[in-house]
Length: 167
Picture 1 (cartoon, rainbow, N blue to C red):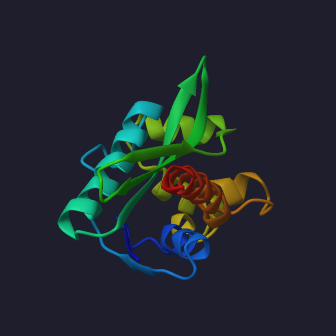
Picture 2: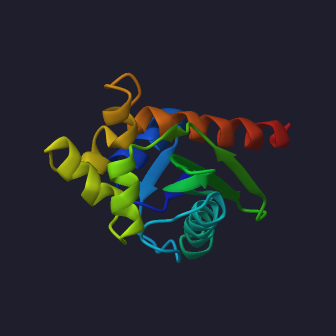
């Protein structure tokens, strides 16, 4: 089976490869067609849908997968959020979301000035490319959950829904 993921970010690609281990998984950079820093569940989901559809259409893959990270507000708190979408050859769309944790006020304030989470996390953690390694979730859970694990869980939810419909 040919599967395309709409990102070259190693944490996202590895998540898909872990779940679809016996299949041919390729990554391709596609546009999310949303802001570089999605600021709601709706916008984050829309980015994942756009990435998955682009893979399914552009690459004529059996499955197109889009994974998108963003933030969303509840009351006065800003939470990390993530969405995944799987689109099959019949244009069925499967959606799933994963872990959410509140972000510290200094990250929230930085995001509200228009900066991206990845940039803020690199400065916060005094590290480079946090988004391609442990991610914000890894920093704020002290390494208990890493970004790849978070996306792996979402991809498992997608695969399970899709497989259920194949029966």
